[in-house]
Length: 227
Ligand code: CA
Image (cartoon, rainbow, N blue to C red):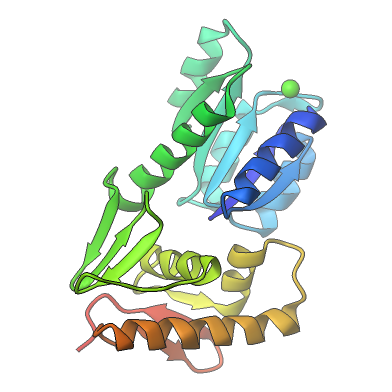
């Protein structure tokens, strides 16, 4: 899962980024609207944590732009205490949820996971696809009730593939999703190849079908109905 934190309070931003990184997210930070705009113009994120009071403008203005460019990106708005109007505006413009500052990281964590669950599986803690079950709370995948012994990156990769099932995912988009914007392309393409290979092997050893297809020279596709 990939997260962008847009917040001008550097300490808070680093704190939030570290917290989610330790939870297995890829995190990036932007401290101004301009920086955020540059990032969402080039990269895609599963979720943007968006502060509204930014030095070069109001974060509300970014909501529409983010959604126009990336329909799948969820937005969690951070607002100052007592600005109910702003919360309402944020939600009206399409934010998924809001959180009032100051907040506890446990609360932020719960909101983020609940938004992502809603986006990925309609709020359910599980994604079920034939014999494959992905348990989002336990971060665990099973085939015919056999737990797949996945590394964190393999799990993230599987979730990314399942989330985008039947869509071609380029190697670039997979690398960007798994490692963020500071990756060495050449190295990571080999990593992706290896992760895909291991994931396929683990699925097949557990008795799963051949869901992951290589699209020669382009990338990979998770097919929801492999024959
Ligand atoms: Ca601020």
